[in-house]
Amino acid sequence: MRYPVNIPELPGRRIEVEHPGVFSSATVLVDGQPATKALKRGQFFVRATDGRESLLALKTSFLDPVPQVLWAGRTIQLVEPLAWYQWLWTGIPLVLALLGGAIGGALGGVAMVFNIRILRSDRSGILRYALTALLSVGALGAYVFFASMFLSAVHAK
Image (tube, rainbow, N blue to C red):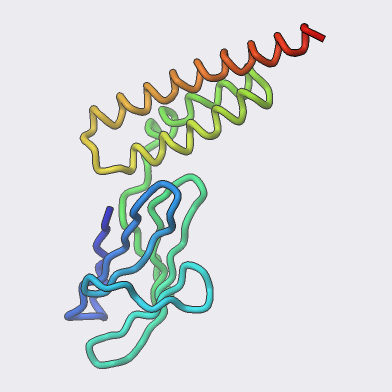
């Protein structure tokens, strides 16, 4: 997905943040072309129309795949933060951590991360919630499967 960045101090430039996939990191595009990377990860040089370069940084969170843009001491949000009910909905798989120890916690944590990524996708609203529900149910099914495999391995000895 591409997110436009509104920086009034850089007129004549179309700045966008592109987040192409689940396992890849976000990049900055200036007029459709990749921006020059700086030395640190998540930092890019953006050239204004007058030739001056400024540093633009992407601040990411482990849970939320859409970064915030740090530029000239300001933080620019590309999208609205998730609402409380969205955090609650995506966090339902974490109940597995309470019920199932390490196996449940691992499966619940992975399901929550992917639920958030699905909610941040460009799919329709109903489809996003349906997919997150399916993923949560799938995490429960995977927990039952792995827990039963673990218990049968323990009792077989």
